[in-house]
Image (cartoon, rainbow, N blue to C red):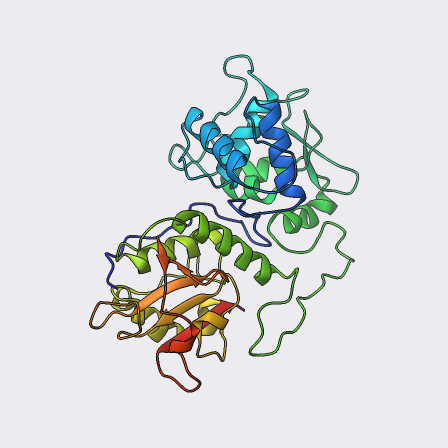
Length: 344
């Protein structure tokens, strides 16, 4: 499939370290339960508070996004979280809060950003006993998303609230380095074999979960529109996949799906990807990037091939529900699969 290459930019940067999980249709667990409770408190009925992101929860999220002027995509990322937190805090006196969302761009970089927090005794932040920065009004920690959105001058101003001996540790904790207790060893991701998906609980595993939720939410119930490369690259940027956000695939490899595989196969380390030794896309782990060549069942363009995200549901997400005719079309040793990739 062909694409018109846009200028891709991360729409929800992570500032290093493990990205916040994107929640969408099909997500489960404590984070979804907390979301449902927050929606209910804000006056949006999410249905049963059961930790399962399904129909009523999806409609509640969309209604909230529409009322707050957000993109109505049914996905809960940094922007929607920030707006929901602000809604639960309630209205404030005029001028007391910065109403921009965490990742809203533009404006003067020398404007202090407080993300809805109010100063206490003239200061927005203070140093906790362990040296980490906390918001003065709520005692909650300044998080990595907020830190990454601040201008350099504001970071310096906030770090000045920390005793000089603890400033380096405080900065490291906010920039994805070691925790503020600098003597505590940082666990490494478990070593995986070449043909395995990332280990459960690793940062790469979380990136794949983000990718899976995002791609399904953007594709389920839709027909492919021929813009597979553009859709998948937008998922890559938003999910924090490998080293790819901020590491552009060059224009010379940006017009056809097959060119992604050509570039990735020669630049796996640069992109932060690992290529799995699989020749059947139906065996790809959910959240993996799959690239097949032209002539694969389901593709129509004479040269472009196709790129999509494996869902583990018998179809592949790339702006619609894509299929390649079933696993039987990929006998051992076939040459239809150009690459199946996961974060390194």
